[in-house]
Amino acid sequence: MIRKLGIIVLLIGVVSVVIGAVFISQAIEKNDWITSAMQQEKVTLGFSEEQIAAGDVIDNAKEAQIAGDTIREHRRGIAPTYNDLLAASGGKFDPTNPEDLDYAQALNMENYLYLAVLSFGVIQMIMGTGAILILIGVALGGIGIALYRLANT
Image (cartoon, rainbow, N blue to C red; front, top):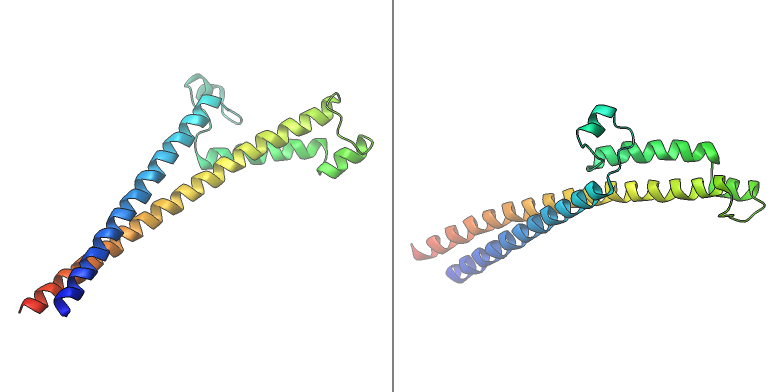
């Protein structure tokens, strides 16, 4: 009975290690994809002339957070809220009004950057979960081997 239990625990450990490795590989793949997509957009808000000349672009969570916060400040300079913008425009969004259009473009860019921040955060959580699954799998594997050997003695 202990021998069968050892084999079952060992198999659960192996499954846990495999699932953890899949989590980590998927997270790395998505991180690379998001970083590449952000590099293609070439957003440089808040970078110095030297950084821009060196080809630096916003491509990580910290830089995206800073840029998103900067855009938010600028957008709120146009109108504190969307309702305030509409109130100033007669209650309706007017795409021919440069102020309304600037507000909408700022809101779009702000959302893009905050979505990147969220994505990088989720990726880090998935990597952490994968690492924990691997550790649990290794521990279960060790317990399974110990139980199997115990049954043989």
